Length: 227
Image (cartoon, rainbow, N blue to C red; front, side, top):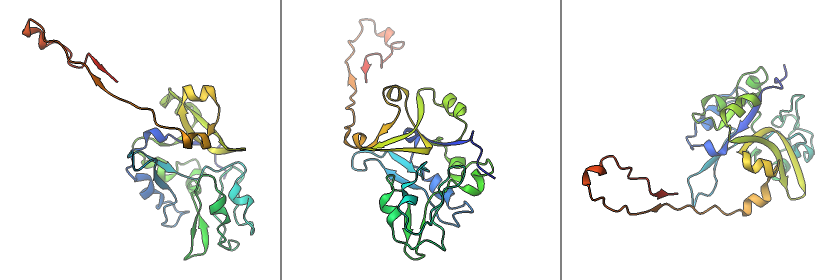
């Protein structure tokens, strides 16, 4: 049974709290056989504790499959890119190097590439992938576009990514601020790598002491704070 077209996978990096629930739940998927296929990466560990879940983006034209010399990586009719097939995989590692999102992993002990397959035993029958069922902040969401737009009114889903001269369209959507999506309907990954974080500062103004001290109880101590 194919995955229903109206159900889609959405990632909202801004909501990730680094709890690792998705990593633990991923190993419980039957198609993974005890292995966790999701990565939790730090955006800039030396400067921030911000994390982001990394799952397979399920490209419409998967580079991993295109560079596989053994034709071991298949894409299902509903757009889910599967792990390499054991009888055909020669563990060459081409897919690992070629993937622009850094998803596939080569397991040397088993001589096979394995990666996220969107919990195909579940998503193919309309159930949520394991990671999406346990994410407490809904950074990983599996549902309809209408549902995600109601939940994230200030964001919009984007599934087109620009890597230099190469444009990649994926089945998985990433939530980006709506104001940015209006300016560009895609994510320029290379440009984002060079982007510097915006400086933020809190300015506390000293309030003058009122003549009548009895009014200090009702005064707002944060009225003059600027962020």
